Image (cartoon, rainbow, N blue to C red):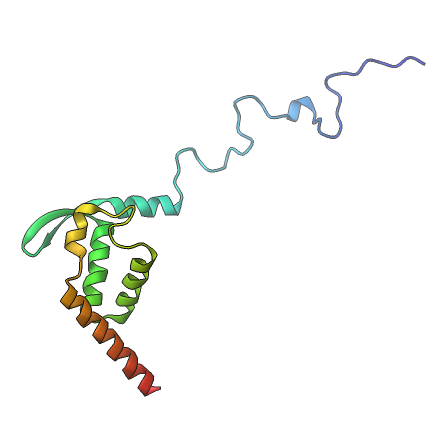
Length: 135
């Protein structure tokens, strides 16, 4: 019995028919994610890094939306918002102000004066005591 030589077009496991194999320079998923599209995390980072003009203390400045959000959070905490206070103390505990990634030019604006910080801590503790006594 004579055996015939194997053909390159033989079909089997791991060897689809030549006509249905991936063509060179053609995607296997043409309806997939387009090149250059960004995920939601990247889009949020881009939006937070966008710089806008604001007026603060009568002076016009350019700041990133990220810096504006941080300043607003600190301002809320200073005014007695306990949730804002918890957020900034948690962030401060995770990475002290001025650590890696901090915007050096924005630190002076967002620093809390020591007397305001003491007052903010006292308000927070008083609020905690009132909540504990009320339950």
